[in-house]
Amino acid sequence: MVFTAPPPLHSDRLIVRVVEERDLPALLEIHAVDDVTRFLPYATWQTLADAQAWYERAMRHHADGSALQFVVEATGSGVVVGTCLLFRFDSASARAEIGYVLGQRHWGCGYMREALASLLAFAFNELSLRRIEAEVDPRNAASDRLLRRLGFTHEGLLRQRWVMKGEVKDANVYGLLRHEWSSAPR
Image (cartoon, rainbow, N blue to C red; front, side):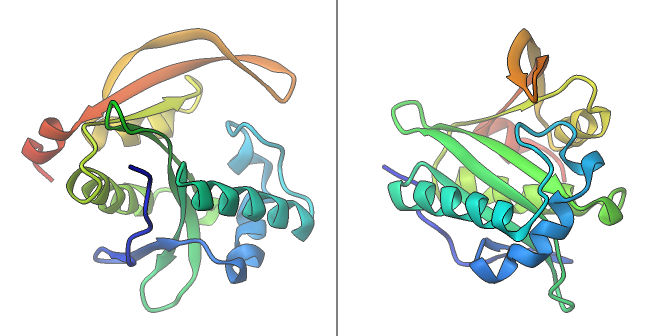
């Protein structure tokens, strides 16, 4: 089994849909801010060429079924406020990881919680995943809070897990099981 792209996922204020090349200018605006990319494993984007390289990688992962990259779009205005993805799909274990990025001017609005709730419902209900994981830099308190609000359990700290941007970084590990999601109040 590989990831297959869904139709757009709708929530009260957002549409979560597969990324398209036309989204790159808006994504460049989001990823060109150092505070946004601070905890991400790649450098702040400088040019549209950076966005294009990212998009081409995402399309390769779509093609081989190993990941699905989405944009988060505000309903009505069509403004792209962020991205989210499912990746590192392990079909034998029915598990995957999630990642997400939200544009700085949209922080504190609850958009990513709403977007990820739609994505998690799709992952558990349509893709029949059993487990979803996330890794977060321990200094990223907002991301830690977001995952806990979505029902994820903090499962531990992986010390010196990554070397990113020339810095050794720890990672908080979170997990969410299908039965926990289906029984969680929202």
